[in-house]
Picture 1: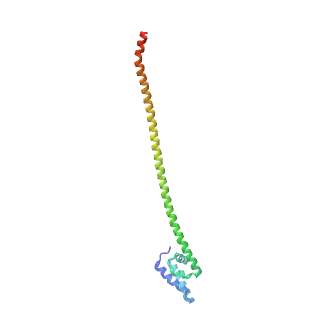
Picture 2 (picture 1 turned 120 degrees about the vertical axis):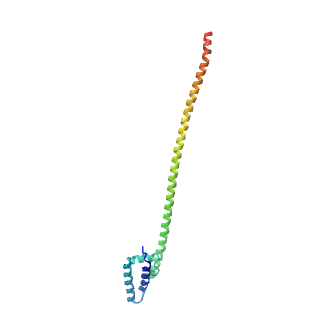
Length: 160
């Protein structure tokens, strides 16, 4: 959000004077800090957010002791949120990889099913052709037997 390090350091030093017992000095420091933040295009809200994230150490002194404890708690919670966000991102990557792997398995399964069907069709066609060849061989054998026995029958008829 804020990336004006030299300006931030100057503002940080000036805001340290806000804790001064001299009201005039504290007020002047606050006004100077406000002018500097406006020139830098940032707000006190930006500074507070940076302080919450631990980037502006001296700004933490602006908060009372009770608030400091809460701020530390907030910092700890922010760290947990960032860790959970990282974990979520990691889990999403793992889920994406898992989904991709499952898609790949589905494609392979479909290919295997198609190949199985193709081989089943080939086996069925082969069985039908073998059956037809067997039928033709049987018919041919019957025809040969009939032709071979025909002259014997004719001889018997002629003799009989």
